[in-house]
Length: 128
Image 1: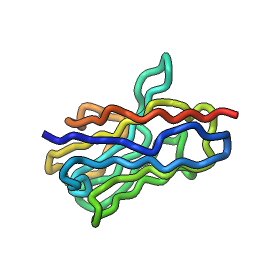
Image 2: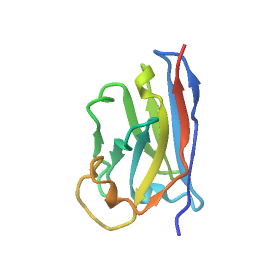
Image 3: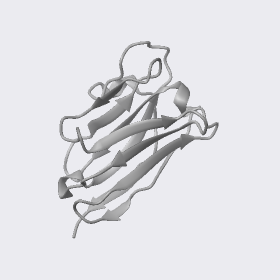
Image 4: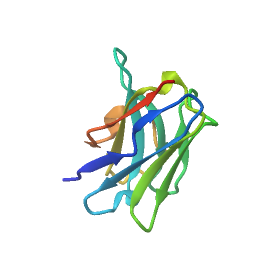
C-alpha cells in the first residue's frame, strides 16, 4: 500500500511561485509514473502534469505549459511541481497520484484511472 503525502501549498499573490512536493513513506516515488492533478471549487478534477516511470518524459496541461515544471528527485525519491507565474485560476486543491504498473509508455494527465494511489491534497490559493 502506497501512501502519498503532498506538501508545499499555501497562499500566494498572482505572479508568485510555489513548489509542491510529493513523497511516499518509502521514498520510492521516483520508481513510478507520477502525476499532479487539481480540483477547483465547483469544477471537475483535471490533470496538470506527469512524469513517466521509464524514461522521465513529462506531459503538461496546456493551461500550465511554460509556467509549471514537474521533476523527480531520484536520491530522495520524491516528485515536485514548481509553479511559477501563478494566476488566480490556478487556485485549487492539488493532488499527487502514482501509477505502480510497469507500463513503459508516456504518462497521461487525461486518464485519471491509470493512477491507483492518491494523496490527500494540498491547497493552493492565488489571490491578492
